[in-house]
Image 1 (cartoon, rainbow, N blue to C red):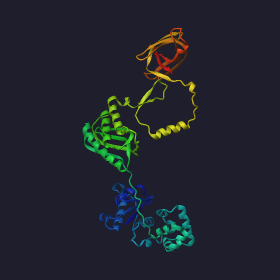
Image 2 (image 1 turned 90 degrees about the vertical axis):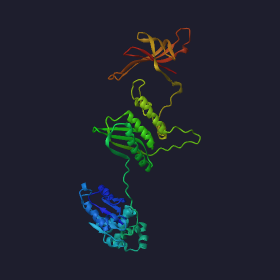
Image 3 (image 1 turned 30 degrees about the vertical axis):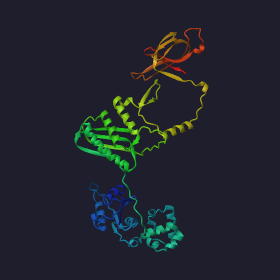
Length: 459
């Protein structure tokens, strides 16, 4: 048996209301839901009693689980008959099996729900127009036509519409599954202030979360932890993973390491763990390629190192968008995917660039740290340089130079910089050697301290 509920002013709430009577619910169209009520007699009695209970509960206020609205309820042996009856008959309707045409025969042919038998709107309009030319105005008149003639003149779509008008269709409901919830929560009777009892709560919630992800063949690369503290505040942490994982043991270790580095300021009385579901990453290894380290082991290693040296001192160096010399920051380490590599190659292909002239290439080798130098100046220009380090030394007379180029920035900060840069060619200390032994260097002088440095050499 099937039941259909129609309400003229309730739509989304009608679906949740229907789930209270049956686990199989189809959202047929706006303001209309269809239920499979087979087997519900043990709870609600006869089918008519079920329909009466549906209509009575819908009149209740929303606070009491109702809809605060009148609804049309129809019970029938097939869902399409119940839908037509609920849409056109007010109140409660009961259609016994075999008596479908008795209920539907007076309905106008224009009101037939052709989408129930997968007939397109344009085809349905043409068929209905043809039926009107034949003088067919109701469901009963359409059902009385010979099936062979309908098939020859209207095609299979016409046959399907005739079966729909006669109440003889058979189909399964397209059950509306509730949206999956990838979140677990727990409320505690007593506040937790130590890490060991909190780890048991972590393990319980993570097991449930990973089981839900596994049932949908998904993984996650982001965990969100929201802790409700006993001082009525909220402590929130987010773990972003560079690789989708589905291992509750790895998640537990990562959460414990993060909690040790960022402990909550008060006792925990409530905990919510949610995640962002993504498709798992599948890697096909080559037959003769050695196995790479597992991503979960790499993530745990990085987490342990972050606990030892600090989160800001581990990761991948990335240049900052600034003119500050040698400025960089540490970003979270993440291996580039094949998709990122393809995008970079595509961008490089689309970018129209002029190929560099190989005769004009000039490399620069930076000294880390830069060599502190003693520079003799003539009229403000460097004339002779002497610099020594543990691994190299630079000295000689300046035979050619270019500059200075002044760069300053971050004047509002305590570590602002200001310096003059020069490109110099150093010749031999004696005049008997040839000029071909000249070397090119980049030197600069800090304007605040007046100290000279050799930053690197040109190759």
